[in-house]
Amino acid sequence: MASFCFGSCFLKDFLESGRNADGSIPPMQFEQLSFSDPIFVSYTSGTTGLPKAIVHGIG
Image (cartoon, rainbow, N blue to C red; front, side, top):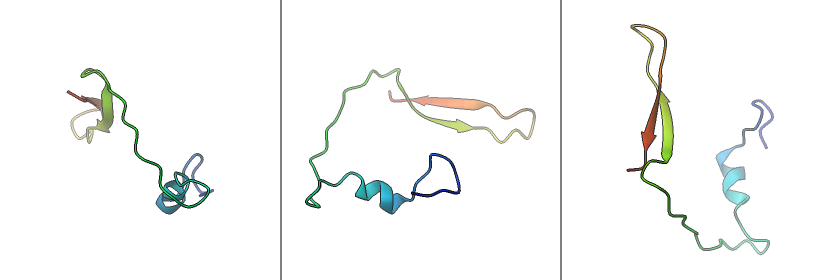
């Protein structure tokens, strides 16, 4: 795992961590979420004031 940033890892290591012991890839499992659940957060540039967080919802 990457040690330069706490809690981070390289994509290759992350993808390998999802494999079974025999190297096979397990089937994906999906979870139903509410339309109001957040999916990601982005931030404004802050050019006209302090940067602000924008939370994007699933729906």
